[in-house]
Length: 264
DNA sequence: CGGCATGTTTCGCC
DNA sequence: AGGCGAAACATGCC
Image (cartoon, rainbow, N blue to C red; front, top):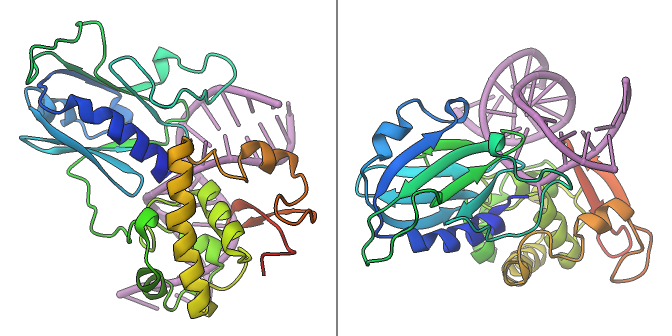
């Protein structure tokens, strides 16, 4: 489920934790540095922000980084900001929990019950990771505010397919497989096109669609709210724009869905 | 059983 | 050095 849009939704939801103190930490040692609990216990949460697909919990000590992998998700104070279920059955089993942050004292008099987990990460496939003071230097510009100049610069000397290059987080940060197909669809650009052969107009169009479509998808609820949502990808109906047969293939090891008629 | 999945990381080869 | 593609990772679902 998680791309940058989901990380943004969860981040906004978790901002309610600001001002609270972390009283207790439980985590799955297989997905985090061993001293993560010691480093966070007793710290006050200063704020929550996002960079690319990473959610960042700033404290008066270190910053906690949450990377969601393919199936990670977040609950804040016992409520899931994104209600959509990843799996049809048993979609939220305790044994898939990777992080549980308990908070008690707050900036106000509000107090959460001891049994409620303030911040919970659940990840069935366990490809997600928890980190302390994650390195953000290598991440490219934010997809959701991407400018033509940023994109043009990022694609320089990248001869691989534009779809693969856009999925590289050091090129542009925050795009996942669904959103990449979505913005390419709207920009009218075939995913197979070599990235460094984009024209100025292509870069302008593509960057503009990143801002416009990602903004719309965020408002609608995330990366599964585009015209090429998972149901469309599975069923592959006619192109929603021109009615032509859509194509599904593998590009850079990822499934690509596009319309060969208007994406060239 | 085989194949697929909204993501990274690693490795061998240019 | 750095880009590229394939494989690996881990697990559930269809």
